[in-house]
Length: 341
Image (cartoon, rainbow, N blue to C red; front, side, top):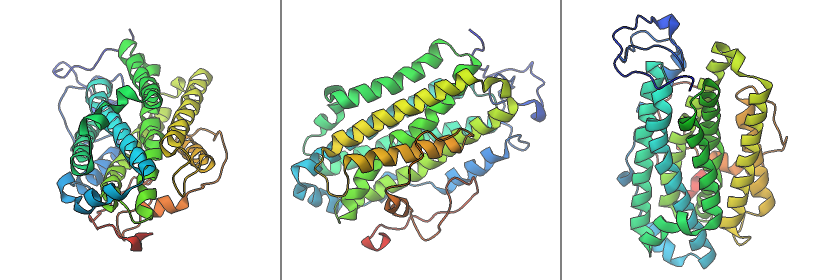
């Protein structure tokens, strides 16, 4: 085993700010943020704090009525999406705090991951509000991750990647785990998000879409955390970015596209107006290429964005911003209306 988890109390360390490392450093255990090495982490910290929200602020009253009027295909999609999102944020809550943060040795990034774990738990609370507000069978939704074979296959693959880090925490596997988190935050959620937005685009389940917008805003900052970690690692530890690692990353992203595209086709089942198999697959391919390019990798699929309306839909208010620029912006919690489309 190459590098164990960091010590949480390490008074023997004399590591100064310039000597900090994202992984395999020698931190004292003190959260010292008056001097930082990774300024992007503080920018993201401020953004996350400004984005604070709470699930019960979203009114789900109309959704409870809308849900009863959905077609059987729409109800099936809604329930499957909720079940998938519940699993993803559940595993991320534990993965971030138990599996990733113990290996990160820069305190300004440690606080980011602590905040991320809180937000993942907040999302689980959000889904509970949604389920309790609209579901005709709460237990069924919470058990779908066991019962639905497509969802089970997807979840098993994601969980296995995190298990690999725990079993063998080499520096390469720590870096691969960053890519795995980038794929999770930037690809695996998006078929579900777009499904919810498609319902709202036709005037249905607007409260649910509002909740997803808040959740997606958080997920984009989480994506930025790992994007910046990877780009900083490229400068700090260039020897880790080998051809072998590149091949593993491409394999990971191809698998993510295959799994998420299959999932998107499964939840829509060719029965949801505005979403077909080709659009879903191309959208996921586009996202994968975008995520790869932002960490210095060549795109795989080279396809156009087939669902540009989603980008405007997921914006929370009039303060337009490029989420992929790590700048601090205050976001109000504006309401969702059809005027946003």
